[in-house]
Length: 441
Image (tube, rainbow, N blue to C red):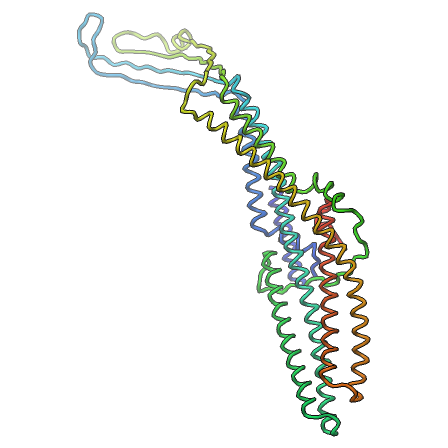
C-alpha cells in the first residue's frame, strides 16, 4: 500500500513537471524510468510472492488442526434383535476435532523456512538489480542524446561557416579573383555539410526515441533535459582490485549469486533429509449423538457429554523404497548445487573483468581527454590561419575544407571522450557502492 501511494505521488509529480516544461536532470529521468518500468513492477509482485512463501514456510511449522461435523439419517428395513425385518429409521450426528504435527522430518521444515527467508533477501537484490539496470540504460541513452545534440551544434557551425565561405567565393568570382571551379568546390562542401547536419539530426531524433522508450515516457510528448555535463576533474585513484573488494560485498549480482548458492545448499540438505525416518504426532477428540424410532434416545446433551473420546498417536515413518525418487532427487540437487557454484565463480569473474575494463577505460579516457582538448585548440588555431590565407587567395578551397573537417572531427572526438569518461567514472563509483541515481556531478 505504501509503495502504491509512493508511485501515485511520483506520477502526479512528474505529470505536473510535464505541464511546467521543466528541465530534467539525469537523476530525475532515472527516477521516472524506475517508477514507470513494467520490469520493476513485475519484480515487486515477485517479491510479494517471496513473502508469501516465507509465511507459508513458517505456518508449516505449526500444528494442522481440522474439525468435522456429520449428520447421517438412515431409513428403511433392517433386522432387529429377534432376527425379524422391521421398518426403522435412525439418525447419527458426529463431531470431531483433530490435530497433527510433524516432530521430525529430516529438518526439512526448518530448512524450508531458511530457504524462503533467503528468497525474500533474493527478491530485494533482484529489485535493486532491476533498478540499477534501468538507471544504467537511462544514463547511456541520456548521454547519447547529449552527444548528438553536440554533434548537431558542431554540424550547424560547420554549415554556417561553409555558407559564409560560399558567399565570399561568389563575390570574389564576380571580381575575377576566384574561378568557377573554386566556387563549385565550396558549393560541394556546403552540400556535404548540409547532408551531415541532416544525418546528425536524424541520429538525435533516434536518440530521443531510445531515451523516451527506456524511460517509458510518452513518445509524442516533448522532453527537455539538462545538457550541462561538465568534465569531472577527479580521476579514480583506486586500483581495479581495490574496487572489486568493495563490489564483492555490495554489488547486487554477487549478492544474488551468494544467496542462490545458499539456497542450493539448503535444497540439497532438504533432499538428504527426506532419506531419514520421520516422526509425527496426531490427536483427535470426538463425540456423537444417536437416535432411532425403535427406542427412546437419551437427550442430546447427555449423549454429547458421555460419548466423548479421543486418542493421541505418534507415527514413525521409515522410507524403504519408492522407486528411487528420493535418491534421484538428492543427486539432482547435488548437481544443481555444483552448477550454482560454477555460476557463482563465473559471476565473480565477470564482475572482476567489468571493473578492470571500467578502471582501465576511465584512466585511458582521462589521458585522451587532455590530448583531445589540445587537439581542438591546435586545430582551431590552425584553421583560423588557413581561413585568413584562403580569404587572401593564398590557399585553395580544398585546403580550407580539409582544415574545417579536422576541426569538426576534433570537437566531436572531444565531446565523445568527455561523455564516455563521465559514464565510466559513474560506473566505477557504482561498483564502489554508490547507486547511479544518487551520483550528482
